[in-house]
Image 1: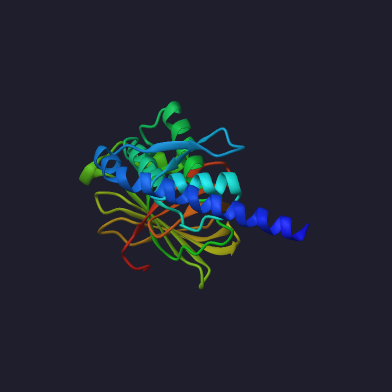
Image 2: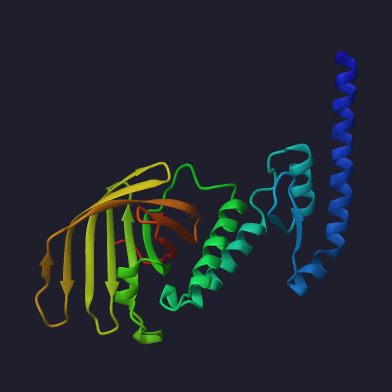
Length: 250
């Protein structure tokens, strides 16, 4: 019986290698055409009703992983980059959320789900020390502060985070130079980050800084993070999408 099982396993491996070689050969011959036309094939994973994006190594990788339940040896592949680009492009046309309709918000939530799925699920651990620029939010208070300014007149929002120091800073900057900051303590456990406000300040050019009392605490979960973007959902169910800002944490 052991001999039969071994032969069966070897036959499966040979079949897998043959499928990989054939698919990789076909994929390589047509990759240039796919890239130039900016089109992408889709295949459906067994047991999933949602289409999966297939890029370089995509067809062979997805089929091998689906049929033979293999790990992803080829890394995340371009399906994550494609999902990220779609999400950022959609967020950009909503004016960071200020012009988003109900349909826009539903589409963005679906694009976030697609990105998380392409990444294999939310991260188990996160490291997001740095400065982050808010490019989309559903939080009503931030949308109110944004107003309808665009371009040079746009109000911007940032988060500055240092996990090792346990600090989280939120900053809203108006085009006229007015600056509102909120300092918080931060504790990170897995994908969940808990914060508690420590203080706030309003700086108006030409006037002394006005300190405000801290009020509130909460948490947010990181749904996706890489070197470029971070997607979070907070205790109230609001969604935030951030792009990494290359300026150092103050």
